[in-house]
Length: 293
Ligand SMILES: [Zn+2]
Image (cartoon, rainbow, N blue to C red):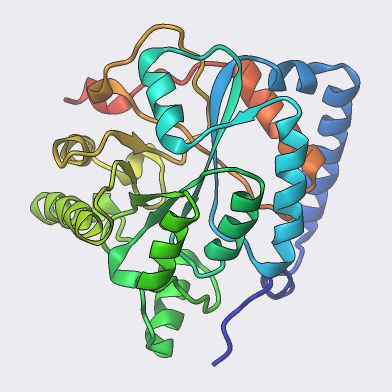
């Protein structure tokens, strides 16, 4: 079986629906409007910590990764994930910052990690220990289809995870095998979160950050949020859009990190438009898990 190595293969497989063509054209218009009025640039210049994440850096996306970093570097400081979390916790947000992360631990993450290393940037890779080093092709095909809606993509192996660390990146927990936490019985969920962190610590010596699969508020019960912090993680991240612009400290047990998903293949103008809009909307202090504590 051949593993997918190029994003073009996924695009060709998914095709372009009339709806996606329309959406693309609408975004072109919005991006153009906000660029002309200066709104995008003003948003990008606003002090905040913007967490961005990808799932893959296929070989034909590496150039776009480089371009994106070069473009956003003009207005932002790229900082390590831990520093971003610390700044949000302390309310020390004096300029525009970006923290990069990637979820799911595909092998092509390492290619992206090397590009980032060359550019002097540290990212955080959220991985699932049970998927690291998988070799069984049928199993990989099944997992990729069921959990990631992707054709077969190779996962990192153990030595490649070490290489990420050697390149100056952080490794975070994305749970044991990428189950939707809200679908597990509570005991199993708590056990999954603790076991993942323990395993990452035994592999790497640390595992400070947690990001749960699928990332919507509804994908993690409040008990899962509490379990992640009780297990010793410094932070818990969603995949809910937003950015952090607080100027007062947020206690660690009240913090919930927002992250924006991007696909590197998207036009840079669209990504800039999303981030500019996001920045203007401002703070992401709301933590729905506290209300149900
Ligand atoms: Zn994931």
